[in-house]
Picture 1 (spheres, rainbow, N blue to C red):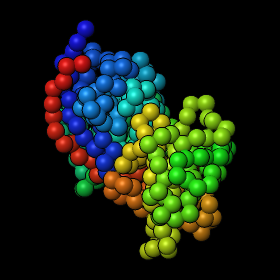
Picture 2 (cartoon, rainbow, N blue to C red):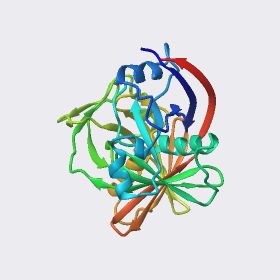
Picture 3 (cartoon, helix red, strand yellow):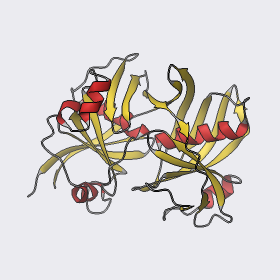
Picture 4 (cartoon, rainbow, N blue to C red):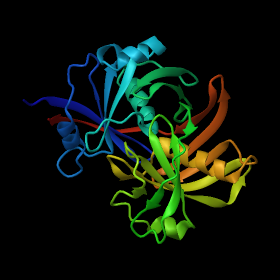
Length: 292
């Protein structure tokens, strides 16, 4: 059986996605077809595929609506290999931009909207020049696996951070070492984590803090997608890790440079503990039609 997929290609700092609208949950694609859509040689190409579906039209939406009845839309996100992912920080900004541009959502600058994800409800705020998403409460997982990667001279310890999806952050010696890592293959974690993890390699700027803002560079290998030009939750995890290593005097605002651009990260107190917010641009590139 084949379907016609009306899609839009979008990206957030080079982290690119294929988006399609399925408000009533009538066009669910299995993993193999999602992977075919995301294939860069034989499909549209993207780091992931995002289906815009109403929370009421997807099984996972029941818990979302119980938590937040106003969360009309659910970001049904799949990695490039078709596997399901809990959350995507760049993807959710592009998702909201897509809903607005397609007339599925009204959201004026300065206002916020709750969005359902497999990691729970996430509030997205529209800025004058982009979007900011409250990624919610974060936590240290207690995992500190040894990380090996091709062209990384010495295996390094990683720091496990949970942002609704799993991350392991690794500090490397400098820009030359960061640029030299071969991320065409997944880094190895010892011991391996049961569900895998996104792995971020990070270098602090010199000086680390300027005008009260921390500054770091990052590259990332995303589980199910490979190396990407940007990872929003990964940028947040990297900033959290560097702040953790730097100690109590480290700032709560960070500028994270990724191969695809720059993202902002901010930590702030909330009723249920410390939250972390991610800000950055979102762009739609082109529309198309594909037989899947």
